[in-house]
Structure formats: C-alpha cells, structure tokens
Image (cartoon, rainbow, N blue to C red):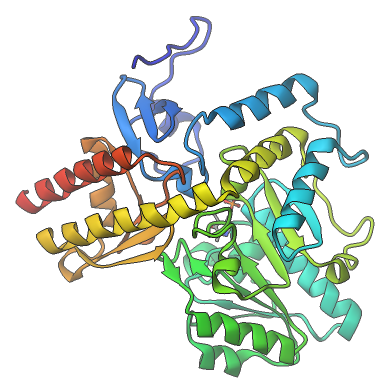
Length: 411
Ligand SMILES: *Cc1c(COP(=O)(O)O)cnc(C)c1O
C-alpha cells in the first residue's frame, strides 16, 4: 500500500527536526510512522512494519478500526467540547457502561493515566481526612511501580529515577517490594489511607501480581480502614483477557484508574469508585477542563462496546498462548529469553543473563527488520499489541523479531 503524502501547503518534516524543535525528553526511533491500519504501520518512506506495541498498550483495536473511526467522525460533526458547566451524552453513556461492567458506581473522567491516578490519590487522602482526621494520609505503593509523571504520581511511583531531582518529595509515601505480603503487612498502619498497586506491573517489567498478594492487600486495607487503589491504566480494558485485571483475580479494589486502552488512541482517563467514596469529592473539590470530552467519550464507548465481548476477550487468551509458545521457542533456540510472563496481550520476555540490559538493542534491531516491539526496563522485551491482531500478523511479526535476534546472535 502506498503512503498518503502531505498536502503541498504543509511543511515537509523529518526525524532530524525532532532534535531542533522538541524538548529532548524523548528519544524516538529514526523513522516517522505516517499511517496505520489494523496492526500494520507505514513510515514516511512507505516501509511497512508490524506493530506489536499498540502505542504502549493504547491502540487496543489497532489503527483506524472502523468502529472507532465511525464514532469519532460522527461525534466530530455533532459536538467537540462543551465544558463541565454542562454534561454531555457521550460522557453519560460511557460512564453507564463502565458502571455496568465493573464494581464501580461512579466515574470521574480526565485525559490521561497520570490524571486518573492523581484523582485516585487525592480521593484517598480526602476520604481519610474527612472520616478519620488529618493524621491518616500515608500511601503505600510498590517498588518499581509506575503511576504517571505528575509530581504526585512520580512520588507514588516506585522508581526514584523519575522522582529525584524535582525538589522536595510529597510526604507520607512508602514503597515496599512488589509481591511481598510480609513487607506490606509491616508497612501498613492506621495512618495508611491507601495501598496503591498495579495488578500487573507494566513499566516495571510486566510482572503479574500473585493472587495471595492481591488478596492480602485487600484484607490489610479492610483491617486498617485504608482504600485499595488498583492502577489499571495498562492492565485494563481487556488486555488481561478480562475487562479489568481485578476481575481476572477476583480481588475488588475501592478505586480503579483507567486510561491508555480506554480511548483506543484518543486521550482519555477515568477514575472509577463506589458511591460511598465518590461523595467525598463534592462540588468544587476536583476537576479538569477536558474531562468527559464528547469526542474522547464517544470513542471510549465504541472501544468498550467492541472489546467487552466474549469473542474479543477469549481471543486475547488464545493469542497469548500463540505469543508465548513462539517466544519460548525463540528463547530456547537463541538462549535469549529466560522466561515469558504476563497476562493476555501484555507479555514480557525476560532477557537471559548474557542478554541482560540489551532490550533496547533488540528493539532497534527488530524495527530494522520491520516489527515494532517495546521494552519494560532494560531487561524485558514487552508486547502490548491490538487485542484483535490477526494470527497472521502475530506470526509475521515474530518471524521478523526472530530474524533480528538471529542477526544479533551472529553479529
Ligand atoms: C502509562 C501508565 C500511567 C500513566 O499514564 P499517562 O496517560 O501516561 O499519564 C500510569 N500508570 C500505569 C500503570 C501506566 O502504565
């Protein structure tokens, strides 16, 4: 397929322009993708790549899915924005569907995962303040966790490289090793207002929570009048093979944050909670201009309608098995992976000892062979493709990855 060229009145741009005009907080690949369809992407030169990244667990239905294009373009012709001085139909429809499909009774919309977590953490502190007084504000989170890049969320996140060097830290946040229930027990107290966990650590290396750990966290919260907050920004919206990973585990949080796949590529975030907790965010306590934006919510509704079906969710489980078998085979053949872990279509291939630290090298070699993959830290190659990726695209993508690994082995 050919690439659509820019209209003549637009400036031609190249990857080199990035280093001239952008803040250097990212280091993007050497090519610029210009068009996508399903799990295939074309760059400026017309080269085709298989996309196994899903825009970092965002493009849950691939690129240009007809149902999402339809929802977006129909809403674009009706109304883009109206502000929270008014409500709007797409926001109410999406909220109803999220409430019907989960433990939650109430939804707060925002624009990103960080903002969904910011709302969750502020809610937890507010609830504790109003119910128990000003001494109950401590948040316990996991080492290596990731919750976003605002000041509050990098402080709750368990990766000092993201929170150091930005002035005084936010007080009252403790980190304990993930999947270590004894450490969690030792840290929790009656001053704890929330335990914050990703049911599957994404950025931290695609590490699934152990059932007993998540159950134990739930029990500790109940004992200490603390809220259990699940950050499902990455694990949610079908990626685990259930709509949300908490449903896979059968451990229900008090507050859940969602974003990434919720909009399938259109920016949206949501915080879900119960009626009893939601009432602590009374009129005026919190807000955001674009929260509940009609375009975002119209797309979100099409996403949930499409993915919250047995066909798609069962397909995720089958595709997990296909990935895992092939990656394990590759791991054995080239000695590259020591373990393949994750749930559904959030998969981490853990690099073996001799390959440790080389995830980025593999990413770059893979892109040269025509397949986009991710890393989750230096030691894990991560896959977060479309939930409806064709088996043929999985096979072709992994063929290309294998070629990349083979050439690195020889090189
Ligand atoms: C990506 C991510 C976030 C941050 O989401 P943004 O939309 O980038 O703000 C938060 N938590 C988890 C688990 C994530 O994977």
